[in-house]
Image 1 (cartoon, each protein chain N blue to C red):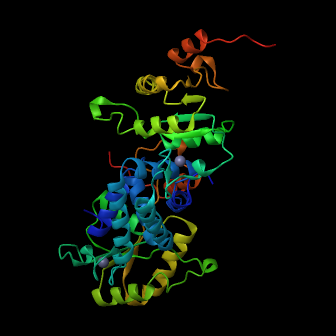
Image 2 (tube, helix red, strand yellow):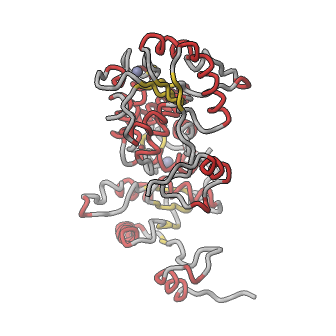
Image 3 (tube, rainbow over the protein chains, first blue to last red):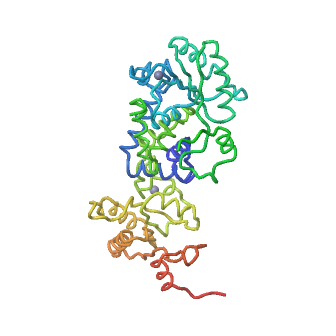
Length: 200
Length: 200
Ligand SMILES: [Zn+2]
Ligand SMILES: [Zn+2]
């Protein structure tokens, strides 16, 4: 142990942050202790408050410190379509991309029986209740394009099919601005088989 | 504002950490809120405790939560030599490199009149008192090999010269394992003029 026990404990605790190894933990700790104690205090307060107060929206499970999140409260959002995502980060990515004006539902994960993550953990009862109550025309199943994301989308579609709603899934294809030679084979073959008429 | 106010405030506060931009702040906040709230609580506690308790050693100004740090308390350290460094990170780098078994003094910066950093801010009175009291044979002026570090080393040597102590400075030269063509010109010319007899 090179630093004092209290500093060592801080170094160790900083490593709960994703992407932070021993060297960056040391740089962060010394920066806060040597140059920005006021910033450190603000971080303590902000993190404490977020952990205490931020939970799931009672309607869509988005992160919020209120009972219902600002997206659910926003009467200008179109209530004809509901977009189901795995994480708040996915919701933010879709919002930042722009274009979608409907509502969301956040699963906070995907089905993973081996890890004990079943329909309960993903709030699928709440999702069914939301779809029953609000009579969406379309459910966009925007889970990740992975084996688990696909399986979760299929499970949800099966569960909600009796409600007579239409499902969609994000298009697979080559990313905009990417170069074909660097696109992986699976993506390329999906993009090929899903090719569209060309409007010239 | 995409996230709720409490989450946005957390994102902003995480950016006091060096090297953390908007994207990593988002990844960190969502990781703590979604997957590791217990780790987040530990970080709150550890950072709060460190900011409350960690200050400067009354003898060497190393970071410690005690009055005197463990290096100063360690009777096995050689008390013939004192190594003066700009920061606790420099002290740690020298300790990790191994070889030096003497004592330290931490300036927490270098002289910088334009930023109002003078002898008081660097604890030079305390340094003089330490040298007077403990009769070191050698003071290693291990401030950074920069203009400011050099100036600080010269200032300290002038101040302590009446005490009849010997000063040394880390050797300049090419870094071990480096390739000459990638070494900057200033370093190379210092290494050249400081060339040593070769023992073959
Ligand atoms: Zn909501
Ligand atoms: Zn000390």
